[in-house]
Image (cartoon, rainbow, N blue to C red; front, side, top):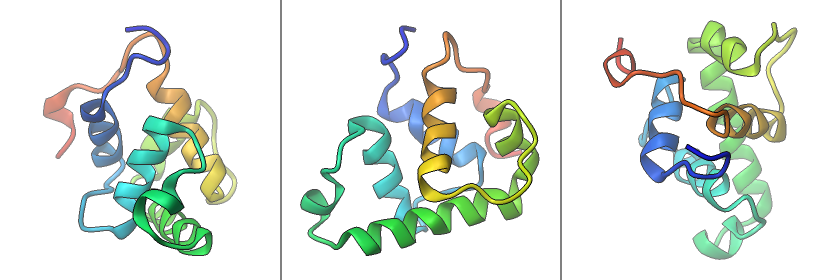
Length: 110
């Protein structure tokens, strides 16, 4: 897998591994942001940048609260506080663009 060769399923697996599912409004924003890495979320979903920021912040909170150890493993270092929205997306993006994904499908829901 090349650095930018991850697919929609890879992003879904990473977010699910962090305890972030489709039940969170920010899920689709984060998934799209990780696919596009552009400022198109607002245009795509006809919403405001503050709504996108808030909803991605919720995802960061969920991962921090429910799967902190996994989030820190993905970051590659201990986190002293919950990551900001941009830091959260950067952590997931960096993990996705590694030479290979370290997650196995059977570990996602455990």
